[in-house]
Amino acid sequence: MVHPTKRRSRLTRGLALLSVFALASIQSRLVASGPGEPITPKVVIIAYFEIGNDTGDRAGELQPWVEREHLDRVIAVPGVFNHVRTNGDGSIIALKVGPLSINPAVNIVALGNSPLFDLRQSYWLLQGIAGATPVHGTIGSAVWTDFVVDGDAVREIDARELPPGWDTGFYPLMGNHPYPTPRVQPGGPEDARTWTEAAFHISERHDVVRLNPALTDWAFRLTRGIALPDTEAMKHQRASYAGFAAAQRPPCVTIGGNLSTERFWIGARMDEWANRWMAYMTETRSVLVTTSQNDIGSLVAIESLRQAGKADPNRVLLLRTTSNFDRPPPGANLADFLESEKHGSYTAFDVAIEALYQVGSPVVHRLLEPDKVQEK
Image (cartoon, rainbow, N blue to C red; front, top):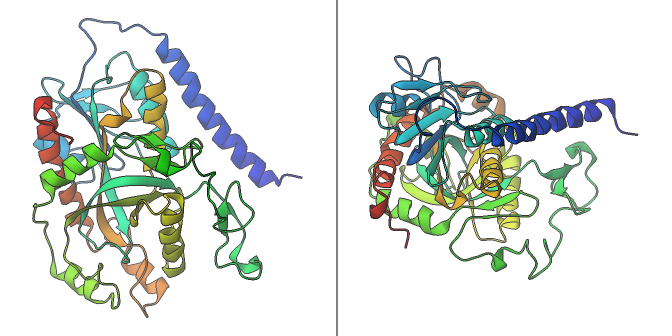
């Protein structure tokens, strides 16, 4: 018998997904109306949250782009929860699509199917702040993402009921214990070793995504020399992570993996699981650096648009800047850490917001001149 709560949860998610595909079906039959041709942006900038307004107050992930790139024109798009911003010539559009993962999926599918836009040749910059594992990262850094893993696509046993020998209650959807070997059939479509060398790839169950490695490496090489800001508060917090060499380093531009979950988790044991899960799901092709809530939904939506002939996932970049650690320092009390590190007041919150534009804008400006994009 299915528990009523689980039945309602499945029904809610099912209805949400149904609305996405129903909207896509309706909009795909629409013909652009009104004067002029669809806007054909060279770059689409995706933000996941904002604080208050798009302009004139404390900045979230969208505001620096709106103000500094003069995205003054506001466009209402049917099916998109928030308005779209664009500049004078329509070469850049930007919008907020969060929070969580289902909201980005709904908004991006609606955007891509709108007759107001032609996104077939557009580059995408997905960008937002994130948590950092002290195992491989530090606060204030900018991370170009190579792999995204869905950390919710799991089976789960309550930690208080773990079978003997289990060190985690999370295990694969197709397994019956943690980390079964082999993870996938060698040589099959899920085997990362068989993926095309220089292209976007999404697994059959949409739980592992590798972004175009050539484009990601190009963006990293373009920005790796940028000096990122640091503060005394950040230095003090980094110093408390004794035994974590990566956490104690100053901020930098790097490449790494992102774990995407609807759950906002925190703590040493969850961090240990997340690091192992990233390595397991990518067959050690990536290491965990950042944690977030949104990106698997965004990337699955763009893959849906690809199948409809309306977007190119090979033109997608994902930039995450780290505002906080995903676990407290060794010996620290978790409750005290939660009290001091809150959304909007993370130790590196404002630095991470600024780094999104500081690192992302040189890439966007180069993408506005496609002849200067060298992915190899």
